Amino acid sequence: MAKNILVAVFSASGVTKQVGEEIARISGGDFFQIVPKAPYTADDLNWMNKRSRSSVEMNDPSARPEIANRVADMAAYDTVIVGFPIWWGVAPRIIETFLESYDFSGKTILPFCTSGGSGVGRSDTELHKNVRGNVNWEKGIQMNRPDRAVIQKWLETVR
Ligand SMILES: Cc1cc2nc3c(=O)[nH]c(=O)nc-3n(C[C@H](O)[C@H](O)[C@H](O)COP(=O)(O)O)c2cc1C
Image 1: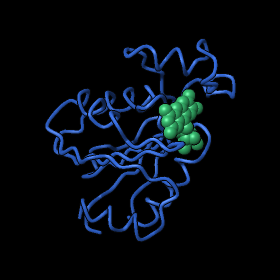
Image 2 (image 1 turned 90 degrees about the vertical axis):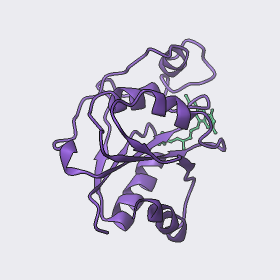
Image 3 (image 1 turned 30 degrees about the vertical axis):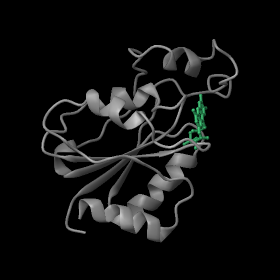
């Protein structure tokens, strides 16, 4: 593939990471894991508890959990594939932290999610709203246990 691709994922329990690594292998892109400054514990992820960290963050559209690491040279990439688990129907707030931390002008952004069954839903448009600059935003898709052919076909979007 001629384009320089970055696959950046946030993954609380490893599912999205695995899919992202596969996408990076197939696309020849670089892989970057978005690491939260404060890691999410099992208690943090408890969606049955309204006071858990994830519930509190998802109830607050302005929550921006801090990220511990940074993409060394974002300018080097034409295409950024952003992967995340669906939390309460949308992307975890930390994805907004990530998207607000760089200038993506002139780049293509291709979101994907994993979930317990939900589709990409509103996450796509909600995220797009917060991205600065002139970005070619491709429609996001759900990638629950995708096979190679599905990933390859999807990647044709950015070829
Ligand atoms: C706080 C929280 C909220 C979730 N909300 C949803 C949801 O609304 N719909 C859904 O299908 N799955 C939901 N899930 C399930 C995750 O999207 C799914 O397990 C995902 O693949 C986890 O990816 P990860 O291992 O990369 O973190 C939720 C999980 C958590 C922890």
